[in-house]
Length: 245
Ligand code: UDP
Image: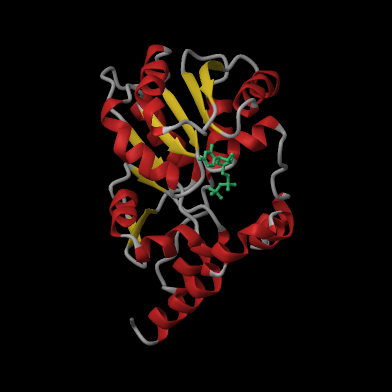
């Protein structure tokens, strides 16, 4: 798989169908081998500039795809265009569709207490016979982590959707994948809130136009600080393209 280097973060150049096919090939393996999937956006790529732990975690993913129009635009500016944006929420939705009626189990981890339960109910009513093996909120203490991992493993999910927000979910998956008996672990950000109907997804035409960041900022003004990384990301990209560093 071709990887495109965006400021030291090596994104796999796959479209949605290719990502689904790859995940499906892992699901069909007879042995349980853990695979990590992350979907960084430009903010996370900027955070990775300041944290080598995060950069290593991202680069060690089995599948790393671009969430966000900004990353795809940067790949074009750098003359190494990515095929398309593959966001965490769209990936999760496509997997739920693909495995509806099949013996492939999902576990939902993340969101405030009560949210993952609601997400599970909504998923079953919207996607038909999806096998949800269990769910847990994402505000557990570190001393509860061993029990949580046992709980997840006891339900034998194939796919673990981890919505703890970035970069917490990526670091959590990376540090725990050796003891999680799931074939695929995906960092899905706020998707569990979206499935629960707690927050609405940014409309597709706004996402396509590259203004998801503005929609989210208006909805959650507290994001302003981390969003300052967006102009920094674009500036860094333009500098790299025209000055070479
Ligand atoms: N969250 C969680 N545990 C935490 C912190 C956050 O489960 O310790 C959840 C939070 O409730 C929300 C999601 O993580 O459902 C973060 O959503 P956001 O849209 O901020 O995701 P990001 O943009 O960071 O990927």
